[in-house]
Image 1 (cartoon, one colour):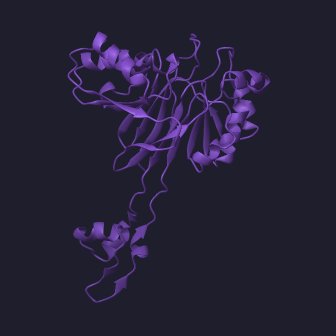
Image 2: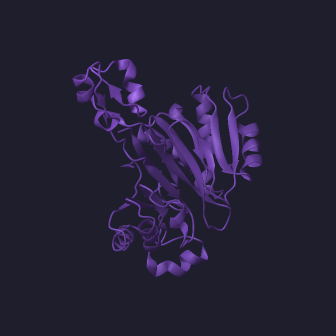
Image 3: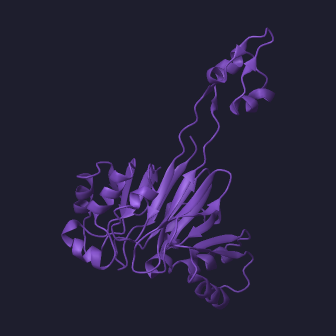
Length: 304
Protein backbone atom coordinates (compact mmCIF):
# COMPACT_ATOMS: atom_id res chain seq x y z
CA UNK A 1 0.00 0.00 0.00
CA UNK A 2 1.27 3.45 -0.92
CA UNK A 3 2.47 5.78 1.86
CA UNK A 4 -0.12 8.11 3.37
CA UNK A 5 1.14 9.80 6.55
CA UNK A 6 0.67 12.95 8.59
CA UNK A 7 3.75 14.48 10.21
CA UNK A 8 2.98 16.80 13.13
CA UNK A 9 5.19 19.88 13.20
CA UNK A 10 3.14 21.92 15.66
CA UNK A 11 -0.05 21.30 17.62
CA UNK A 12 -0.30 24.20 20.07
CA UNK A 13 -2.80 27.05 20.03
CA UNK A 14 -2.19 30.79 19.74
CA UNK A 15 -0.13 31.41 22.90
CA UNK A 16 3.49 30.29 22.39
CA UNK A 17 4.83 27.82 24.96
CA UNK A 18 8.01 25.84 25.52
CA UNK A 19 6.03 22.63 25.05
CA UNK A 20 4.22 23.06 21.74
CA UNK A 21 4.85 24.85 18.48
CA UNK A 22 2.18 26.69 16.49
CA UNK A 23 0.04 24.77 14.02
CA UNK A 24 1.71 23.05 11.09
CA UNK A 25 1.62 19.60 9.51
CA UNK A 26 3.03 17.75 6.54
CA UNK A 27 0.78 15.38 4.61
CA UNK A 28 2.86 12.76 2.80
CA UNK A 29 0.88 10.87 0.20
CA UNK A 30 2.26 8.69 -2.59
CA UNK A 31 5.67 10.38 -2.41
CA UNK A 32 4.15 13.88 -2.53
CA UNK A 33 4.48 16.36 0.34
CA UNK A 34 1.98 19.07 1.22
CA UNK A 35 2.08 21.48 4.18
CA UNK A 36 -1.03 22.49 6.09
CA UNK A 37 -0.67 25.76 8.01
CA UNK A 38 2.68 27.32 8.78
CA UNK A 39 2.96 28.88 12.22
CA UNK A 40 6.12 30.30 13.78
CA UNK A 41 8.89 27.76 14.22
CA UNK A 42 7.81 25.58 11.32
CA UNK A 43 11.26 25.65 9.71
CA UNK A 44 12.94 24.29 12.83
CA UNK A 45 10.32 21.59 13.09
CA UNK A 46 10.88 20.65 9.46
CA UNK A 47 14.55 20.13 10.27
CA UNK A 48 13.63 17.88 13.17
CA UNK A 49 11.11 15.92 11.10
CA UNK A 50 13.72 15.14 8.41
CA UNK A 51 11.25 16.09 5.69
CA UNK A 52 13.33 17.67 2.93
CA UNK A 53 12.40 21.32 2.32
CA UNK A 54 12.50 20.89 -1.43
CA UNK A 55 9.88 18.15 -1.50
CA UNK A 56 7.04 20.44 -0.38
CA UNK A 57 5.02 21.40 -3.46
CA UNK A 58 2.15 23.32 -1.86
CA UNK A 59 1.09 25.01 1.37
CA UNK A 60 -2.56 25.09 2.48
CA UNK A 61 -3.44 27.86 4.96
CA UNK A 62 -6.67 27.39 6.93
CA UNK A 63 -7.12 31.00 8.08
CA UNK A 64 -5.31 34.25 8.77
CA UNK A 65 -4.60 34.02 12.48
CA UNK A 66 -0.88 34.37 13.07
CA UNK A 67 -0.35 31.00 14.71
CA UNK A 68 -1.33 29.43 11.39
CA UNK A 69 0.56 31.60 8.90
CA UNK A 70 3.32 33.72 10.52
CA UNK A 71 5.97 31.19 9.49
CA UNK A 72 5.24 31.20 5.78
CA UNK A 73 7.34 34.15 4.63
CA UNK A 74 10.35 32.81 6.54
CA UNK A 75 9.88 29.41 4.94
CA UNK A 76 9.70 30.97 1.46
CA UNK A 77 12.86 32.96 2.17
CA UNK A 78 14.67 29.78 3.18
CA UNK A 79 13.48 28.05 0.02
CA UNK A 80 15.17 30.85 -1.89
CA UNK A 81 18.44 30.48 0.00
CA UNK A 82 18.39 26.73 -0.66
CA UNK A 83 18.19 27.34 -4.40
CA UNK A 84 14.65 26.20 -5.03
CA UNK A 85 13.48 26.50 -8.64
CA UNK A 86 10.16 24.62 -8.58
CA UNK A 87 7.03 26.73 -8.13
CA UNK A 88 5.47 26.83 -4.66
CA UNK A 89 1.68 26.86 -4.64
CA UNK A 90 -0.06 28.62 -1.75
CA UNK A 91 -3.76 27.99 -1.07
CA UNK A 92 -5.33 30.43 1.39
CA UNK A 93 -8.27 32.80 1.94
CA UNK A 94 -8.20 35.55 -0.67
CA UNK A 95 -7.46 38.35 1.83
CA UNK A 96 -4.01 36.86 2.29
CA UNK A 97 -2.86 37.64 -1.25
CA UNK A 98 -2.00 41.38 -0.88
CA UNK A 99 -0.22 40.74 2.42
CA UNK A 100 1.79 37.88 0.94
CA UNK A 101 2.72 39.92 -2.13
CA UNK A 102 3.87 42.81 0.07
CA UNK A 103 6.03 40.46 2.16
CA UNK A 104 7.50 38.87 -0.95
CA UNK A 105 8.39 42.29 -2.34
CA UNK A 106 9.93 43.41 0.94
CA UNK A 107 11.82 40.27 1.98
CA UNK A 108 12.04 37.89 -0.96
CA UNK A 109 12.75 39.84 -4.13
CA UNK A 110 14.78 37.95 -6.71
CA UNK A 111 13.52 34.44 -5.96
CA UNK A 112 14.41 31.85 -8.58
CA UNK A 113 10.98 30.22 -8.23
CA UNK A 114 7.41 31.39 -8.52
CA UNK A 115 5.02 31.65 -5.59
CA UNK A 116 1.64 30.90 -7.11
CA UNK A 117 -1.30 32.07 -5.00
CA UNK A 118 -4.68 30.32 -5.11
CA UNK A 119 -7.54 32.06 -3.33
CA UNK A 120 -9.90 29.61 -1.64
CA UNK A 121 -13.54 30.20 -0.80
CA UNK A 122 -13.88 29.22 2.85
CA UNK A 123 -17.68 29.25 2.67
CA UNK A 124 -18.16 26.20 0.48
CA UNK A 125 -16.83 22.69 -0.02
CA UNK A 126 -14.93 22.57 -3.29
CA UNK A 127 -11.95 20.85 -4.91
CA UNK A 128 -8.98 23.24 -4.90
CA UNK A 129 -6.24 20.81 -5.95
CA UNK A 130 -6.28 17.67 -8.08
CA UNK A 131 -3.76 15.41 -9.74
CA UNK A 132 -3.78 11.84 -11.01
CA UNK A 133 -3.73 10.31 -7.54
CA UNK A 134 -5.59 12.62 -5.15
CA UNK A 135 -7.91 15.55 -4.60
CA UNK A 136 -7.88 18.26 -1.95
CA UNK A 137 -11.19 19.87 -0.97
CA UNK A 138 -12.00 22.75 1.32
CA UNK A 139 -14.13 22.13 4.43
CA UNK A 140 -16.02 25.25 5.59
CA UNK A 141 -15.50 25.83 9.32
CA UNK A 142 -17.02 28.19 11.88
CA UNK A 143 -14.35 30.38 13.45
CA UNK A 144 -14.09 34.08 14.32
CA UNK A 145 -12.75 34.86 10.85
CA UNK A 146 -12.97 33.13 7.47
CA UNK A 147 -11.61 29.62 7.98
CA UNK A 148 -11.64 26.26 6.26
CA UNK A 149 -10.20 22.82 6.73
CA UNK A 150 -8.86 20.57 4.00
CA UNK A 151 -9.82 17.05 2.95
CA UNK A 152 -7.14 14.96 1.22
CA UNK A 153 -8.60 11.99 -0.62
CA UNK A 154 -6.90 9.29 -2.67
CA UNK A 155 -8.36 8.46 -6.03
CA UNK A 156 -9.35 4.82 -6.54
CA UNK A 157 -6.62 2.60 -7.92
CA UNK A 158 -6.83 -0.32 -10.32
CA UNK A 159 -7.25 -3.87 -8.99
CA UNK A 160 -4.15 -5.81 -7.95
CA UNK A 161 -2.95 -8.44 -10.39
CA UNK A 162 -2.62 -12.02 -9.10
CA UNK A 163 0.90 -13.00 -10.05
CA UNK A 164 0.25 -16.70 -9.45
CA UNK A 165 -2.63 -16.72 -11.95
CA UNK A 166 -0.66 -14.71 -14.51
CA UNK A 167 2.18 -17.22 -14.25
CA UNK A 168 -0.15 -20.23 -14.30
CA UNK A 169 -1.89 -19.15 -17.48
CA UNK A 170 1.32 -17.71 -18.98
CA UNK A 171 -0.37 -14.40 -19.75
CA UNK A 172 1.94 -11.98 -21.61
CA UNK A 173 3.14 -8.88 -19.78
CA UNK A 174 1.58 -6.81 -22.58
CA UNK A 175 -1.89 -7.89 -21.40
CA UNK A 176 -1.53 -7.05 -17.69
CA UNK A 177 -2.81 -3.48 -17.98
CA UNK A 178 -5.82 -4.72 -19.96
CA UNK A 179 -6.60 -7.17 -17.19
CA UNK A 180 -6.19 -4.49 -14.51
CA UNK A 181 -8.73 -2.44 -16.45
CA UNK A 182 -11.26 -5.28 -16.40
CA UNK A 183 -10.47 -7.56 -19.35
CA UNK A 184 -10.87 -11.34 -19.13
CA UNK A 185 -8.29 -13.69 -20.63
CA UNK A 186 -8.82 -16.36 -23.22
CA UNK A 187 -6.23 -19.15 -23.28
CA UNK A 188 -4.79 -20.49 -26.54
CA UNK A 189 -7.13 -23.46 -26.06
CA UNK A 190 -10.15 -21.14 -25.99
CA UNK A 191 -10.87 -21.28 -22.21
CA UNK A 192 -12.22 -18.00 -20.82
CA UNK A 193 -10.63 -16.97 -17.52
CA UNK A 194 -12.78 -14.43 -15.71
CA UNK A 195 -11.16 -11.18 -14.61
CA UNK A 196 -12.26 -11.83 -11.01
CA UNK A 197 -9.95 -14.87 -10.92
CA UNK A 198 -6.99 -12.89 -12.20
CA UNK A 199 -7.19 -9.89 -9.88
CA UNK A 200 -7.81 -8.87 -6.28
CA UNK A 201 -9.83 -5.76 -5.41
CA UNK A 202 -7.84 -2.58 -4.92
CA UNK A 203 -7.47 -1.12 -1.45
CA UNK A 204 -10.25 1.28 -0.53
CA UNK A 205 -9.19 4.93 -1.04
CA UNK A 206 -8.01 6.61 2.16
CA UNK A 207 -8.75 10.17 3.25
CA UNK A 208 -7.49 12.70 5.78
CA UNK A 209 -9.54 15.64 7.06
CA UNK A 210 -7.80 18.58 8.73
CA UNK A 211 -10.35 20.57 10.75
CA UNK A 212 -8.51 23.40 12.39
CA UNK A 213 -9.92 26.26 14.46
CA UNK A 214 -13.70 25.92 14.63
CA UNK A 215 -16.53 25.91 17.09
CA UNK A 216 -18.49 22.68 17.31
CA UNK A 217 -20.47 22.13 14.13
CA UNK A 218 -23.18 19.47 14.67
CA UNK A 219 -23.37 18.79 10.92
CA UNK A 220 -19.66 18.88 10.13
CA UNK A 221 -19.61 15.10 9.99
CA UNK A 222 -21.77 15.19 6.85
CA UNK A 223 -18.95 16.87 4.89
CA UNK A 224 -16.35 14.31 5.95
CA UNK A 225 -18.47 11.18 6.20
CA UNK A 226 -16.41 8.00 6.06
CA UNK A 227 -13.08 9.81 6.47
CA UNK A 228 -10.22 7.48 7.38
CA UNK A 229 -8.37 9.84 9.75
CA UNK A 230 -9.69 13.09 11.20
CA UNK A 231 -7.64 15.85 12.81
CA UNK A 232 -9.99 18.09 14.80
CA UNK A 233 -8.98 20.92 17.05
CA UNK A 234 -9.57 20.23 20.74
CA UNK A 235 -8.46 23.42 22.42
CA UNK A 236 -10.34 22.82 25.67
CA UNK A 237 -11.90 20.16 27.85
CA UNK A 238 -15.62 20.24 28.60
CA UNK A 239 -15.22 22.26 31.78
CA UNK A 240 -14.31 25.18 29.50
CA UNK A 241 -17.07 24.64 26.93
CA UNK A 242 -18.38 28.16 27.49
CA UNK A 243 -14.94 29.54 26.65
CA UNK A 244 -14.77 27.33 23.57
CA UNK A 245 -18.10 28.71 22.39
CA UNK A 246 -17.02 32.31 23.08
CA UNK A 247 -13.81 32.02 21.05
CA UNK A 248 -15.19 29.68 18.39
CA UNK A 249 -13.12 26.68 19.40
CA UNK A 250 -14.01 23.09 20.30
CA UNK A 251 -13.64 20.75 23.23
CA UNK A 252 -12.14 17.28 22.98
CA UNK A 253 -15.58 15.77 23.56
CA UNK A 254 -17.02 17.78 20.68
CA UNK A 255 -14.18 16.66 18.40
CA UNK A 256 -14.93 13.07 19.37
CA UNK A 257 -18.61 13.50 18.50
CA UNK A 258 -17.64 14.70 15.02
CA UNK A 259 -15.38 11.66 14.56
CA UNK A 260 -18.07 9.29 15.82
CA UNK A 261 -20.81 10.77 13.66
CA UNK A 262 -18.54 10.82 10.58
CA UNK A 263 -17.73 7.11 11.13
CA UNK A 264 -14.05 7.99 11.05
CA UNK A 265 -11.50 5.29 11.77
CA UNK A 266 -9.09 7.47 13.76
CA UNK A 267 -9.20 10.84 15.54
CA UNK A 268 -6.16 13.07 16.10
CA UNK A 269 -6.52 15.79 18.74
CA UNK A 270 -4.57 19.05 18.58
CA UNK A 271 -4.46 22.85 18.92
CA UNK A 272 -4.12 22.50 22.68
CA UNK A 273 -4.65 25.48 24.97
CA UNK A 274 -1.53 26.58 26.84
CA UNK A 275 -3.43 26.07 30.11
CA UNK A 276 -2.79 22.31 29.98
CA UNK A 277 0.52 21.01 31.27
CA UNK A 278 -0.70 17.52 30.41
CA UNK A 279 -3.30 16.84 27.77
CA UNK A 280 -4.47 13.46 29.09
CA UNK A 281 -7.66 15.11 30.34
CA UNK A 282 -8.47 15.88 26.70
CA UNK A 283 -7.56 12.40 25.51
CA UNK A 284 -9.65 10.68 28.18
CA UNK A 285 -12.63 12.90 27.39
CA UNK A 286 -12.40 12.05 23.70
CA UNK A 287 -11.86 8.33 24.26
CA UNK A 288 -15.05 8.11 26.32
CA UNK A 289 -16.95 8.99 23.13
CA UNK A 290 -14.59 7.82 20.38
CA UNK A 291 -12.11 5.19 21.65
CA UNK A 292 -9.67 5.38 18.73
CA UNK A 293 -8.48 8.88 19.66
CA UNK A 294 -4.87 10.06 19.88
CA UNK A 295 -3.01 13.12 21.12
CA UNK A 296 -0.80 14.75 18.52
CA UNK A 297 2.64 15.96 19.49
CA UNK A 298 5.57 17.52 17.72
CA UNK A 299 7.65 15.04 15.69
CA UNK A 300 4.99 12.33 15.77
CA UNK A 301 3.81 10.77 12.52
CA UNK A 302 0.49 9.01 12.00
CA UNK A 303 -0.42 6.56 9.25
CA UNK A 304 -3.69 7.44 7.55
